[in-house]
Image 1 (tube, rainbow, N blue to C red):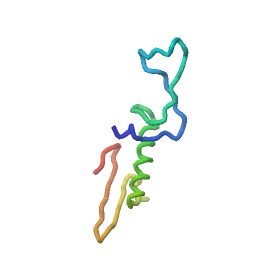
Image 2: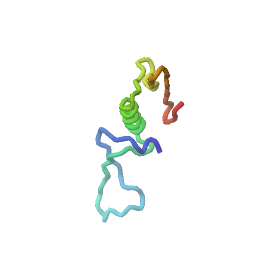
Image 3: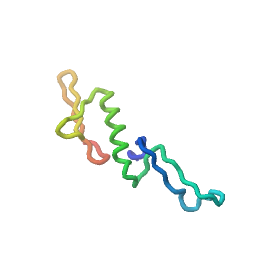
Image 4: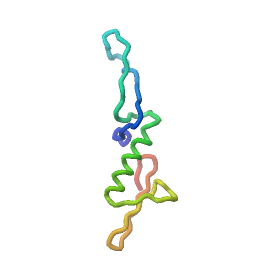
Length: 87
């Protein structure tokens, strides 16, 4: 469900799902949050994830943007993201 928590920055529209009755009118939906199978979904999710990690004290590596590091009280915590899995 990770990709469902990304906020879209650009305008994305989609047709109504099959079976939805729009009263005979041609209409579309404007998406405000990402859905699976959208090209924008991974980018939207990772952008939001990055903001949260920086807010709680992690910094993003310059050599690998999926690596987050936090140093505190002589201890180091590293977190690396692969698609939507964390190691």
